[in-house]
Image (cartoon, rainbow, N blue to C red; front, side, top):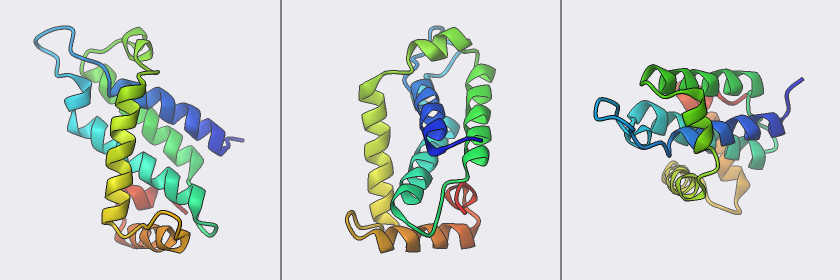
Length: 137
């Protein structure tokens, strides 16, 4: 059965997608692709809520399936698996996306250190049926 560490590994793989620069003029840079960027940010927010809120958990299998969908999207843009994997460990891009996710979580009402606020944000996202909410239970 999958664990949060499996989700982290999958998230790390997918975060690598966002660092890819287009190798041909016809392909957009993955870091500029809204579907990937928003998907990665939403996944990071859901993961952080699940980590900090005792009454909510990340939906591991749904999260992994969502991340594989993002990978398929990157491939549909013309990126090969080897190209995607070549950039998995780009720390600067991971930090950029994580900073955006942290700010969005704060904008939604999450206060670092006040984990109940993360629960409230998560419950609101679940009730609203957002991508973040669909990644939580």
